[in-house]
Image (cartoon, rainbow, N blue to C red; front, side, top):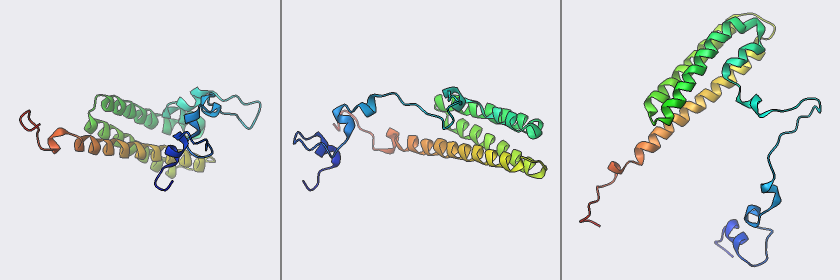
Length: 164
């Protein structure tokens, strides 16, 4: 058995189904729908809650809404432009748009940090998490660009019909 992976052990018809991937055997765990359950039985979780635009964050902090709304709207527009550029395989424009959104969120954080308010710490925490997600998106766009450039056929010697 030495040298076999758990997946190989599970696929083998030896009767030993304690190892391997349960999905290979049609386990009901993998066939049931995924759902989230709230700790509070009075709160219903809707999938649309997780698809809210970034600009909706401003409404959660009424004392900073006038400051946050324009910056978050602009960052959301930059991220939408980045998505369109990425789908068009224009990685340079996508990275530029994501970087622009990150700069706007960084400037917003500095502006909120200079203000005084009861919910300043919560607002800064939320802005930091938005910025972390934007930084992650930027690294994904840049790394995807590097991978795409590395996969081009011009990085390998050209093959012709005579060399095959």
